[in-house]
Image (cartoon, rainbow, N blue to C red; front, side, top):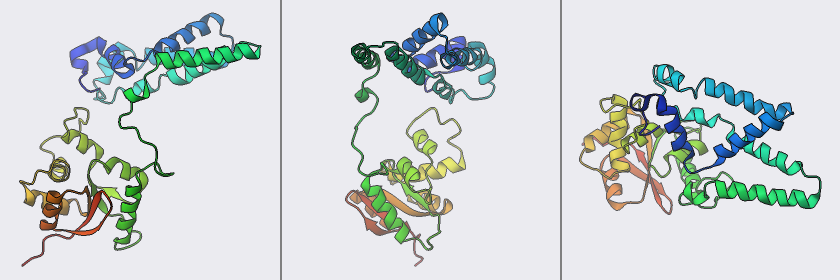
Length: 283
C-alpha cells in the first residue's frame, strides 16, 4: 500500500495495512463479534465456515512473520492490500444480521430487529460521500458517459477495416472507462503508466529510464499536462506505439498543437475532439 513498507514497519506492516484499508469503518469489529457469537452459540456448519476461513488467513497471509519474510521476498508488497479483500467481513456481517433478525418469531420483533440492524450498519459504516467523489447517476445501460459511446462510434466509422484493433490515446478522463466499454480498442496509455506519471508509488514496475514508460510519458505530458516543449518526442512516441487515434478534451492550445504535429481532426462531441494520427507530411 502507498506509504507503507515492510522494511520500515516490519512485523507491524499487516496491522498498518489493515488500519489504512478499513479507515473509520467498524465493520471488522462487527465481524469479530459475529465470530465470537459463532464460537459460543453457533451450531450450523454455514456459520462455522467463517471461523475456519479466518483462522487460515491469519495463519498465512495475515501472519506478520510470513509477510515479513515471504511476502517481502516475493516482491508483492505494493499489491499486498488485495489480500485484505478476501477476509469475508461484508458477507459475514450480512449473514449475522439476517441470522439475528430470523431469531425472532413475531413479526413486530423481526421488524424492530431489521431497523436495529440497519441502524448499526449505517452508524458504524462509512458515508457514501466519504468514499465516492463527484457522484453522478448513470447515463445509459453501459454505465459510461454518453459521449464515450459517441466517440467510439466515430472511431469505428474511421477504422480502415471493421475488424481492426487500433491503438487509441484517451486523456485521463476517459482512459480507464474506455477499456471497459469497447474491447476492440487497444489503449496506448496503460493505467499504471498514468498513475505513475501522476506521482503514485504503487505502480512499481515502471522506471524513469524504461523505454516503454518514456514513450507513454511523452504522450501524457501533452494530453494530460499540456506540456508542449518536446513535440518531436511526442510524434515519435505516437509512431513507435502505432497509435491511430487521439481523443482529448476540447482545448484550443492542445488542438492547435495536435494539428501541427501530425494529427487531423475527424470528429468532435460536446466536450471532446477526436483526431487521427497521420504523421507529418514531407515537404
